[in-house]
Length: 322
Image (cartoon, rainbow, N blue to C red; front, top):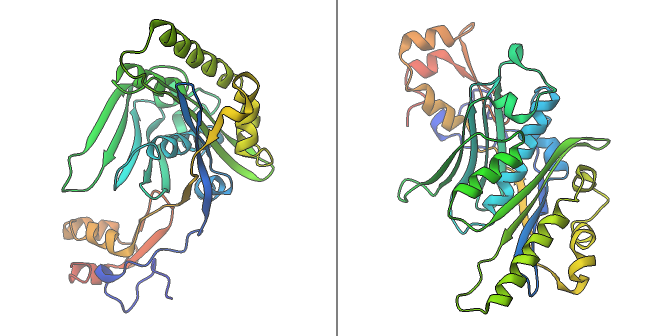
């Protein structure tokens, strides 16, 4: 198969081949779980080698790479809790040196993300709030042009991405939820993980003492989850099942930790020559002239960081138009 980033005999608008990116699938990328008899459920996200494949394609400073890794793990954890067809995305836009952070995950687990960074303004040791600056987080579920798009917005508040997400949960009408996020470079490459806990709504009419017991169980689960360390979340040798038992088994009993059906995650850049060719047809000829270098226009996908090359004359003659 010809490299779809380069011109070929196939008309651009018909070239939908996937570019040469890693074909990686984490079959157990997301592990749902719940605690039997308690109002607690959650998901443990482990990107494993997929994190290195996604994050390693960019030359972001380490602090930005870690922030993007956390964002992608969080997006996977939230997306897999929904029943939808399309994509779920997290976008952060602010006035800081990381002006934009974007990650999205499709209903079948295709994950991708990227950031826009002003390196001259960046202190790589700064926390997430400083890197992003004043702005907002947007959580969006997009099911295509024939369905209404759901979007929730919240101001960026808190020092970490997990704290910012907690602000969103607190301001929304969703179930009580908390997240713990980790991303970092290990001896095996970049890794990223998320632990998501949700309080299941109690049914109406239950006695007051049972309500108090359920609230105590939720408070206990939060306290136990808070003990999780970044090292535990990123350790490939520590299985998700073992980590959940370590966190919750001692207090609630190993027999109560019930596991759901694992969800796959995969390398999810959806760029193609056809998509980018269509974008080029929207530019006037003068802009295309400025974009061309030695007769070639290069468009780089922000997600997979691959450059697609187009012959300028082909674009101007309408070869990229459907």
